[in-house]
Amino acid sequence: MQKNEEIIIDITDITDEGSGVGRYEGMAVFVPMTAVGDRVRAKLLKVKKNCAYARAEEILTPSPDREENTCPCFRQCGGCVFRHISYEAECRLKQKRVYEAVKRIGGVDMPPEPIIPSDSPDRYRNKAQYPVAQDGSVGFYAFHSHRIVKCGGCALQPEIFGQIAEVFSHWAAENKISVYDEEKHKGLLRHLYIRLAEKTGEIMVCVVINGSSLPFWDDLVSRIVTLCGERLKSVQININREKTNVILGKVCKVIYGGKYITDVLCGVKVRLSPLSFYQVNRGTAEKLYRKAAEYAEPDGKAVLDLYCGAGTIGLSMAERAEKIIGAEIVPEAVYDARFNAKLNGIENAEFICADAAAAAAELAARGIQPSAVIVDPPRKGCSAELIDIIAQKFRPERVVYVSCDPATLARDIKLFGEKGYRLNEYTPVDMFPRTGHVETVVLLSHKKPDSTISVKVEFGEGEGKVPLDNIAKRAEAYKPKERVTYKMIKEYIEAKYGFKVHTAYIAEVKRSLGLPMYDAPNAVEELKQPRKHPTAEKAEAIKDALKHFEVI
Image 1 (cartoon, helix red, strand yellow):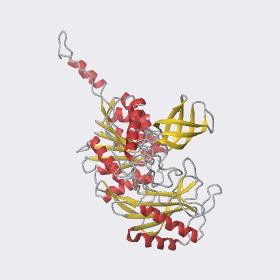
Image 2 (tube, rainbow, N blue to C red):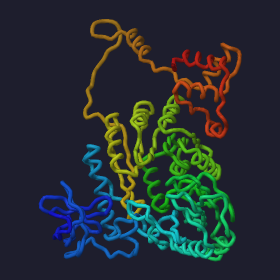
Image 3 (cartoon, helix red, strand yellow):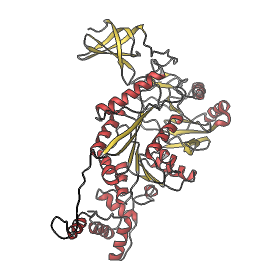
Image 4 (tube, rainbow, N blue to C red):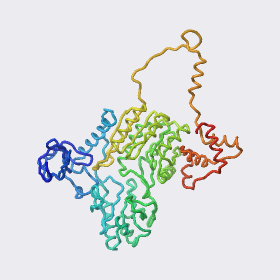
């Protein structure tokens, strides 16, 4: 096999990125834009030691799964990878991918429940982030690059997004607004960011700029208002002067309307700003949350929601639960979660700002015993420390794992298995049709013993009997330590030293000792203020209390 050689090859598999795979002379050959069942004439572009890459020159025999592509940007844009096959075939591939990961990496040969599809593979996204090209037009980055492919009318976005993008492009070109050059770090316009609240129909437009003000902004607003009418509720600029690939800066300024739009998800009102986290596929997110609630069985019980984001999963089942406790490391997301709870009159929800493992450790120390723990980690999955805390300290009846990556999910299923939890059931959810991404909702529960042994024991004095005194001594020896709360520490210090200490002082001392400190209900509010540093006298008193209670 040599570069530029043409070969005839049958496609027998497909990668997560949508490249067909066949074998030629015993070597794997990757051919983009092909489908399982295709026979193609392909030109070799690169030949390596163990594999080769080729371009399909002609489809000789089309696959039954092959579908006519309807997007003119498909071959250039880096968004969709499965637009050349039917949606049914795409769902089969994603279900197979999750199953093979769980079997190969997780070590569990259990088929998943049928994948939950989206209602439509098109027009499902409620958010778009368009980079701006030098001529003022917008589009998306090409596959694995920062080259902009002009595509305002993306098939995954609502049609109104494409229309707003066109208005924006004309405005930028006519007013000769400079465009940001990421190499020179000069120019103004960086991204056009649009959000849609699908349930209410409200629209937000945000222009990301490398500056502090936007020239001719009133002209832009006038044009968008003419297009959108009363649906337009907010136009903002986002200031991002950093030399970074991160799209949004931390500061937003309203130039029209209000700061927020409001959507409804699973019956819960959700306030959205440009910086708020929100699922981009609202309809399928509702299906995912319903499945998570089915697995969690929250009725009348306490539920812990780790990596909770803006709290949408927990809040969606708060009406059924005794209490919802959410933990999230991003302060802005926690503020949104707390506001959304108030917005909906939900009083049995508490949100703390902390790393998931630190929050779990502190909640366990407080004596919290949830019947279900929900984890929705980023792509890297859960830490081994967090899995150990959940399995060994909480020991919930159910663990509900929401995953965006089958490989790390499978790894964590195996880790939970080693801690006494078995895989009960799992369901793939196609949250992002036409892309290579797939979500999965998993139910884990305590393993049941394979067999039981009956042992008859008689207590009392005499041969063959167990003395009751021995039982009492062993029970005392194995009695678990009393959980140490902030209240206990404060009471001990006041009784011994005669003065009071603030909860934040205890937290600061624990932080300095490397101990988790997110225990106080107002921990989130305290993060807004400078840390409170105790005097040397109070710090020593706190350390003494921690030693007294054998925390250190």
